Length: 509
Ligand SMILES: [Zn+2]
Image (cartoon, rainbow, N blue to C red; front, top):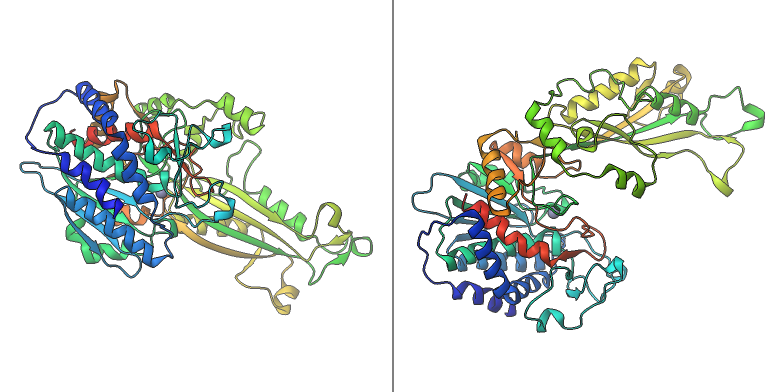
């Protein structure tokens, strides 16, 4: 009930909705003023939504979230409905603007990562609290701040699951609609929203839902309202994300561990052989040496190179923060590195180390690898290339524990398990819609946003983007240090309030 009340306070304040022309800088001032005057209601709306638990496996509460979201869209004149899927429901809303020739589909998710309440420094991840800054910097809780304060310092943070990932963008989006209505500014595009209830569980129902609801999902462009801003805190547009392929290699030695004194130099050591195999995959300069690994990766245009150079990364502070002397590959900036597929050993295991180390020849050695993919290097091809490379090094490849006959026949045996292939996506930053997006944000904020051609991480909705077939890009609004997915997730309120302007800029471009 309280949820519905605070939402409708905003919705009801709105009166007429006529078309008013507004200059971008002017728009920012007006939105800022409105947000300043409505901070209390905005925060209450967010708190109401955060108070409904949203772990994907919690079907009952997931549905409560979905119904609240649907009602909020309906209160703003959207045709809003809950779309059933094989898993958690999707929430869909549509708003038709007379005369508009472009349709924008906005994607968000309303589920959150699972929680372990004992790890949170507050009674419950679903009972939001307010702090006067970042907890790790010693910020204190402001008792009852969320219910009593009328205005909020931009440095204040709300702590709750999904405060940043991914409920606040929905509230900021609704606020953008509300402020535009209050100012008499009509959206320049038809608006559609699709809200996913299973993103943190890998969005298994999203792609199957396309065939069922394809007519509803047609649009000219999709904006993903998820993820953090660039660490500089500047407005950010993200045009793509790398994919991921997980590969596990198990190299076999003797059937059981042997005494290294009795058999060292005679029985082959699987840890050493695995190390030798891995060493064939990357050279000392950090270049992957698997044949075809970089095939198809397009050279960057001068414009794209300029875009990468303009990203305000700070390699000096990063190397200091991480305690490394220099990047792996000389002459490659962080942004340039993210445009390429990577091969990363994410874990190694064989027998024991430290106090548990024993004088043995281990029976096996395991390497867990992840291959980050770019658009030109699909997961299935990369899995094949890795396999072919290993085969060319003289290894016999198996897909289960080798039997005695296999052990007798082959001296180098490796088991390969590949799974979790998610492709990359990328929308060309050179498309007209990409440029319009950038100039819309540049207009209201007075300087171009940070443009990320490809972000390093992987988003599970890439198959959804591929299946829809129209350009997609991310428009994040939240702080990068939000403890997303971990305990003590938080949202910096200054970022939240500015997000309203970001969405108003897109809705009026
Ligand atoms: Zn998210």
